Length: 392
Image (cartoon, rainbow, N blue to C red; front, top):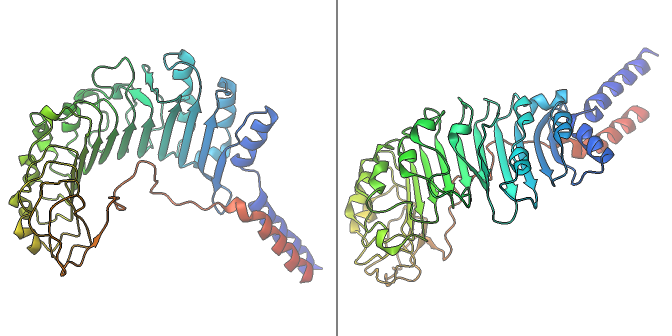
């Protein structure tokens, strides 16, 4: 009798853990009750705690909905929130500005990664009021959202920040702020900017940066202002790809400050006006990857790079006037000499590819957190447990 009672208690506890109420179920039921689609994607841990949520607002949420969704007790464990606002309203509409980042997000006291996306074609909404966000955020990504960083709270743990298409139609100058407006300059390590307005002085003030990616549209960088980045002495990865710049202002050589970056491991200058590959690159002892595709390279590749045994990847493609011999350095694993006059050697050990994709490059869409979707298998687990107890 005692054995049977014990089995019943164990079974009840397991069912409670596996199928117990959590925020995923609560949100689903709430949205179904109001006929709001689409339903969110949730990821829960072994104990049912909420750790990741993809939530899409198809212009159907009101203030009450936000309060209900973000008020569940189980939401306090949420680590990642992907929030997308889809609308046909004009970006200047006050409703658009209020919905792109609901103030209720501030209730998520364990939030580490926040992705905010505004979806209205290629338009960007401009945020002109202060945002209320949890101070626990370590990674913050904006897409189609233009914001002055002075409107952000002090995010004392922020390490990664990215802007994609954060260029509002009425913004002629920087949409990101001024050096004095950065409330997290001491913690920020990674900054990624794609198709967004930015003032080079703003970036130059972030002296603790280790990763800087600029994929810009417009005349942001030039051979006259690029040396302002010389204060970023902690950089290990620098990528600049601004193919839409005016030809007259593109840097014509690798900037001199690069050679003072003692820890630099990866450099990319794509679509610039660089004319030669300097031998001084060989002095960068930690350099692993070089990409100078789609420039104006002439002459030959420095022979000293054959003796740089830390080098694992090179891309000199789309430089039709580049001549001489390819590198035979045995440490190089990947290489690209497409559309050049470089002579390939039988002794080359690297694999050649035409389309460059750096698989080790950081990406604003990837998270450093791994989650288990335990709910997906919960029903199977319960069935197995019932069979075991019944047969036991």
